[in-house]
Length: 269
Image (cartoon, rainbow, N blue to C red; front, side):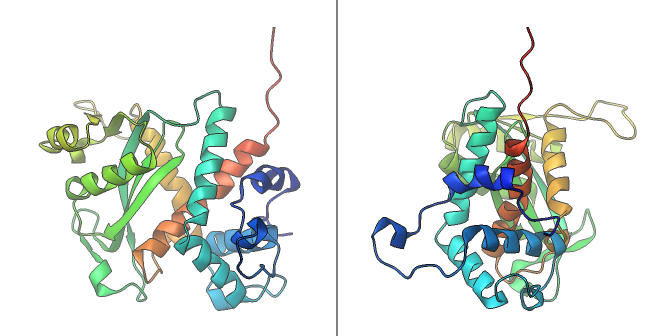
């Protein structure tokens, strides 16, 4: 058993939330040749260890079978369905409603490998990074709501509207969004007019030095740290932006399954 493998308690939480394949519902299609648990464990190993597809350990299914599983779950949005179901379960377990009403957005620039096309990359002059930028929206628990990958040269203000448009489509219940000073300016009015969202800018206190934990903003910063801990996402190796976005969702699965598998606290009188 690898450290990235799902425990029995985690698998018990994941199993009922997996999208049912068409062939199991009597709608035709070719039956899958491998257990879902084995394939999910293989994907978690790839994301956490950052290996090449062809370097898949021999005790997992063949690399091309794992890649076909990854590609099918990406193209048919099956991973998005599982991810969102796990997020709702985590929120309910935490005593919140299944759908969020608030979100926090931020971005992170990462260096790109030679496999990333020139058209999909850029240079972030502020961070001195030649690569790509992932823009994410999370709920107040730090759980991913949506993700958008662009070239690193893209400005946060410019990509905020498409990111928030995705957010409105994925989570229509969200009415308020928090962001840092990089999103300030005319964007606040644009978002209110076009997307009917309240965009609140959380600014750093005047004269503050060093590390300052800001309300709401620390939540999304923590999520970006969770994502970067996965070696496959510490650098961008993906040939397509949608593949990078899928890898980000895979990186969030261990966070949510661990929360769901924890023993609930004993109520006190």
